[in-house]
Image (cartoon, rainbow, N blue to C red; front, side):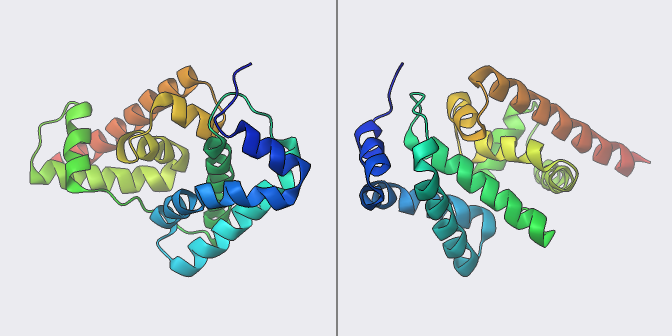
Length: 187
């Protein structure tokens, strides 16, 4: 079975929780940034990050190395904690999207680019985010965080193929919402 590059650090942390600090120091910044990009609040991001690393440290004996980077396990915990935060607070997830990302995404879904299309796409993404947060999470990971299907699979604890299938289904859902906006405006 393949082992991740952090195999020795994980083994040391499993033997003695004091050694978890090496993993904490290595991954704190990237996990914090991931959380902050979703939450957009320094205080809440810090609290969630602390909770995520505490859960990881407590549950490290249960961690099984499957050859994926250790960070994918941390991202999975982070994703669950972020979802729990929004579910508990009944908040709407926002995705920060650069104009360049929107233009790339418009090309990927087969639309021509103009300001009106960009506005409709952002509206469609907001609608989809409210109706189907899982679909928007997949789109966010693939197109705006630029993750591979393998990375998405590791983060969501699904196969690479399932990540690819879910991505294309999410895009189809977004296209349907996008097209319904076009139809509503024609009437």
